[in-house]
Length: 226
Image (cartoon, rainbow, N blue to C red; front, side, top):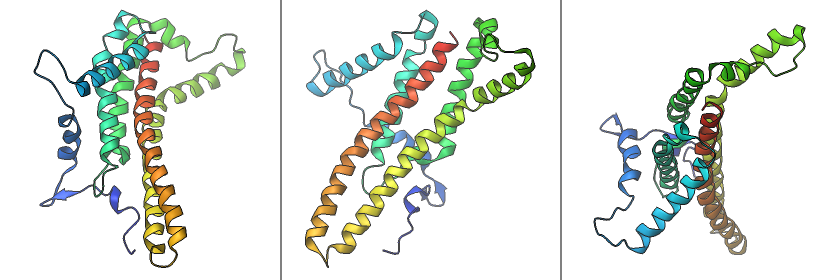
């Protein structure tokens, strides 16, 4: 009961060295692959889900935008598996670290914006000034639109970090309450334990949804610039 509430968010170490890299590389190794001509049900379901997600994201893109399809599918699989990894007992969730999420968001956002400025310079600059803006408000609106553009990767990273961290903290608090009441009030313990199970199911859904939202927003940024 004296465990630090934020202890699960501390980067683990092995012999004094950060183990975040090894943990980050673990989820992709758990994705099953097949060397046979006929796939089993698990591989078939996995390929169907990837094709369905890819079709939904890439439908709105042109040829240049669809060249990012492999990167976006790799991104959503990586974030989803990393989020699900953190739901295992005594595990670590790399996506609760703002630095890691920024390391994913900034390069992808910068690549999309750079693509827009290279291929559609006039349209990219036109986004900084809405049509029909009164002349006295032009400098202010240009500054506001520039700030809103530069804050996009921060919003991506903070959204993912906040949602995953909040869910883990809530599960930790309810789990601690269940353990504390297990020796005093059995009916209340059963009710809280049921809530904990439902919350765990919800967190599985949140882990998958946040991976989809993160990748979808990157896809929308790309669509605006291609």
